[in-house]
Image (cartoon, rainbow, N blue to C red; front, side):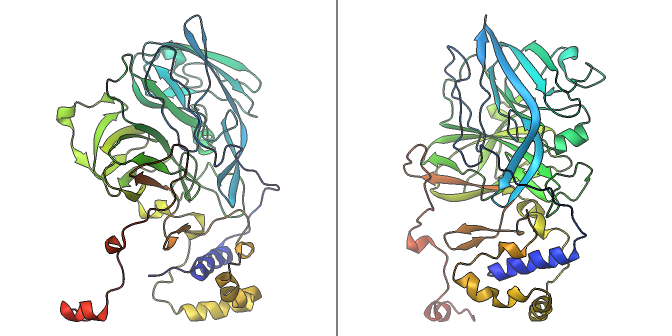
Length: 432
């Protein structure tokens, strides 16, 4: 079925008509890092492990002081852009949502200072790390909370390697729902003899952000309507790239409030190589095309990028690849959409002239509620890509230029699905 921009706007208008009055937060804000290239730093002095790439993210800077890795996290309010047209006032670390990726090496001692610039108290929990009880970060149990304006020190030696996370563990329902989380990657003490050519890290999360509002709702329990990879929605998610034949690692971590995510990769099968409990023996490995990443867990997958093309990587929960304007809509499947159009003409006069203007490249986003996105939609080479939300694209090419967006894959004409000809149908006995 061909989805037109009229269809998307019709859905937006129906949702707007059905929604209660919403209080909009004045002003707008975009994450200063939105759309920037991933920044990485060397994991440590005299350690040759390849750094992790966090799409749409950065690695937390560090300094070495007497052999101790020193890092500084600042919890603060952040203006964050999930995608052009959808921004929110969130909480994050160091001016980012999600916080910067921490990269360290097994065996190191780390000293992490946490400064609280929030209006409430907070803590940080090092999710999956084996640390002394007093460093585990649960407010009231392991420490007193960090009050606004205070800076606390966490210090411990890293006893494992793998993919982990960090997040607030004080009023975590509220603070994690507003964005206080990040990735924590520990490289093995002995560098891998054959590391992957690409090592990506993606943190999955979910939010409730009503159209027209600018503050995520931490009280939501079920109906999350913004599903993100590294706090971005497609088409703002940064593409993953690989040269044909390269071995690619993707570290998937899930700090969603309630949802497990079956992450599906098109065009390739992969092997699950690690969980947050540690690496899996190769003899125990099996191949998959989808991997369930439970809440509070990480899964690491590896594969050879041997199929050129543009390959979706997305959650296979179908409502997780759409946006807020698709939630709470009446069921119009089988309805006479012409009658819906007639009804909308009476209430939205500009709707009647919409088709011609859109065909000429017009933009009717002003007809939708402010600070909202339609249910689906990024532009693809053959029309609208009817997925958004927790979705990105793996771009595999024969050769790539580092730091340059490869553009859309140009498939050989004979490999593209197309409309069957009359002659083909008759030849094969198919009645069209």
